Length: 258
Image (cartoon, rainbow, N blue to C red; front, side, top):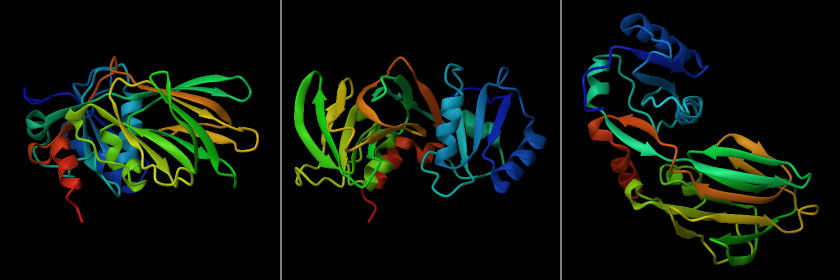
C-alpha cells in the first residue's frame, strides 16, 4: 500500500476449517473491523475465494490482501501470521478491471455479470457449440465449431485460459486473450489477442440444437443466443502482493514454468 500500517483490518475467510481457524486467530491478534470501517480486507482462502471477495467488495474501494489457505493461490500471498500490518503497508497493488458480460437468452431474458478472470461459453449437451465471433462490429470468425470459447482478463490469463492453451498476458499489456476450447473447425485456429478496449460479440448458431451456457467467473446463464463482452475500466479493484511476489512478476514467471 506504500503508506502507514493499517489499524482497521477486516478478515474474510472461505468456509473451509483451515481458513476459518486462521481467521479466528488473526482476528484475536489484530482485531476484526467491520467492512464499513476497514482500511483493508484480508482474504483467507484460495483463488476462488479471492474472486468471491472481489465481487463482494465491488463499490467499496477497499484493497484486498490475500493469504493462501486453499489449493492454488496464484492471487494470494503465502500464509504468515507475523507482522501482518507491516506486510500490508509494504505490499504492492495490482489494479484489476473486470470484464462485463451482457447476455441475451433464447427466452428473451437479458442478464449482465462481471468477471475478474474470464467469460466463457460452453456447450451444454453432447452437440458441439457453433459460434460466430465479431470484434468491434466486424465478423472475424463466421463459424467456430468447438466445445466453447473464452475471453480472459490479463490477470485471468493464467487460469482457465492457460489450461485451454491460451497465451499468458502481462498486466501492463492491456490485451484480452480470446481462446477456443477444443476447436473442431477451424481446427488450426488457436485464438487471438485483442486490444483492451475491444468489444466482442459471440453469437450462438443453431441454439436449439446446440445449446450454450455463458459463465462470468461463477455466474452462469444457460441457453444463450448472444454474449457481448468488454472490459469495464470504470471499475478498479486493488489486490495487494508482497514486494517479492508481485502479480506482474508471477505472470512473467509462469511463462517459464516447465
